[in-house]
Structures are given as structure tokens and as C-alpha cells.
Amino acid sequence: MRHIIFGKMKHYAFALLTLLNVVFALTACSSDNDAFFSANENDAPRILNSDIPEGKNGEPEVLKNISRTENFVFDIIVTPADYTIVTWELDGELIHEGKSIDMPLLAGNHTLKIIATTTKGKQTSRTCLLTVRPLDTDPTLGNDIHDRLVKQGTAAKLHGKNLEDVKKIIIGGQEIDVTYNAQEKCLEYTVPNFADGTYNVVIVDSKGERYGGGQIELNTDPVYPVIPEVTLWEGSFDVTWGTPFNELQYELINHVKVGTILRAYVNGNGKGTAASAWWRNLVTGYSEEDNGRGDIKINGSMVLEFELNEISLKLLKEQQGFYMVGDGYTVTKITVE
Picture 1 (cartoon, helix red, strand yellow):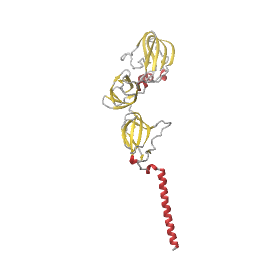
Picture 2 (cartoon, rainbow, N blue to C red):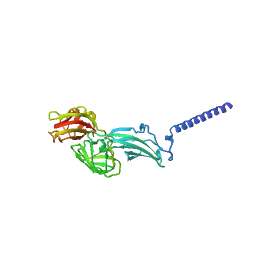
Picture 3 (tube, rainbow, N blue to C red):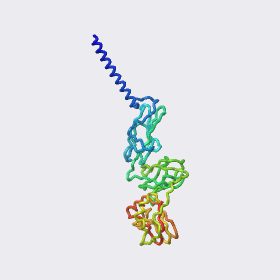
Picture 4 (cartoon, rainbow, N blue to C red):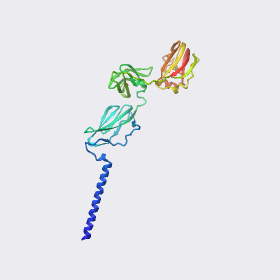
């Protein structure tokens, strides 16, 4: 009888030990994975995704890099799941609510903020970058500081490419008519009278299609960074029809970008302009055979200024560099700013 009782006690002891192990295991799991066991609306929210980049040195990193023809698709895991609402903000604007998103976005480099808020008002968020690539044929805007920082009520320009068919832009939700400047390859418009701040820009073509245009800052007293004027060449070079200025023919391209101000200090009694080595106007691309190269009349000492654009860079690369062309004047200095 004692052997039977002892055997039963061993059996009960083993069963109790097994049960305790299960309890301990569950306790350990609970402490390691609180997110999956927490369902209390009083808990602080947590975003559990491990596929959202943490960022470096306080700067967000890119979550996704997609073409504008692709939908942005992503799922968020939160806790407490039953008591948490997820909202999505793109460049400061609410675009979606829900734990999953699947939607098209306008092209551009965006800041994406994912916000988790509980029914008790407790909140947490994750911020990252989202790149949506335009197609090669899409109208796109450049990033010149004078285009992106403008004063309310003034006439302004937006340079870029494929802008010929653009009819409107939208700034801060307001539609604005634009005029396409074929000579400068840019859009001209009047800046709306909004409060100082940063606003999203949308491009609208003649068919009503919309494209991302990035952001623009409106400021009643815009301050632009001071870029020093750098002398690339100084001396005395007499320009004639047979001897264009070519001292910086292949070097200039290494010192310029879109928005660079090229200055030619000249004196004399003639006419001329900045051009490619194929004698095409360096700003418009026109030649005498087209609509006229647009040579500038020179009388005495003058400073000729040229704001370089995408046409300029293309000409410098494809048409053998930079000339000052014309006749009857002397180049004394070439600078860039």
C-alpha cells in the first residue's frame, strides 16, 4: 500500500512541477513580449514594426523608394491593438487612417509620420522618409533657393523640366494659374498671400493630371544665403567674329550648376553674349538660325549677367564648352556666383 501511495505522490508531484514550468514559461513570455499580451486601453501605445528605420543622429531614414506608378503599401503593428488608432501624415498633411495603407502618392521626397493614438489619448509616433520617383516624362521642379523661398504677392518663377504643358500649380490647396516661359524653360506665377510657412506644391497639366512639386517656403522677409563671387579668369581678351573668348572653354562646367550666375566683365563698342562652342546662346539655346541668338549691345564698361539653367549645363556638356561670342569688345574678367 505504501508503494502505491508513494507512486501516486510521485505522479502528482511531477504533474505539479510540469504545471509550474508552464506557468513560469508563460510568465517569461509575457515579460519578453508584453506587446502581445497587453490589451488594456490604459497602456501606452507602441509601434512594434522592426522594418521601420530608426534613423541616425536624429535624422530620419528612407522607409521606401518607389516609382509614382506604384502604390505605397505598408502595415503597422501596434499595441494595445484593440484600443489604438493609426494615422499617417505626409509632409504634415493627414492622408490616411488605419493600420494598413495602400494608395498612390505624388512624386517627390516626402516626410512620413506614422502616429499611434489610444482611446485614452496616449500617443507615440515614428518618422521616416519616403521617396516617390517621377517618370522621365513627368513635369518636375528644380530646387533653386530663389524658386523655393519666395515673398507673398511677388512675381516668381519655378524652373524644371517637362513644364511645357503645365497650366496650374496648387500651393497650400489654392489653385494658381501659371505662364510657361519658353525662353527660360520655367513657370511664372504670382505668389499667394498666405502666412509665413512651408506649403506643398502640386503641378497640374492641361489634362488635369497632378504631379508632386515638393515644398515651397513663403516669407515676408526672405533671406537668401550669400554666395561669394568667384573669379575664374582675369586679363584682357579681344573678342571678334573670328576669335571668340575660349579661355574657360572646358573648365567652366566644373564650376557651375543650375542657378549659377555667370558674369562677364567687358568694355568696348560692339555686341556679344555667353554661348556654347557651337555659338548657341548659353541660356536659351538659340542660334542666329533659330530666333536669333540674342546678342547684347555693349557700350563702354559693362557687366553681363547670365543665370544658368538646365539648358546651359546640357550645352556645356554636348556642344564643346563655353565661349563669349560677338565682336568689338574686350573681356576683362569672368566670375561665377
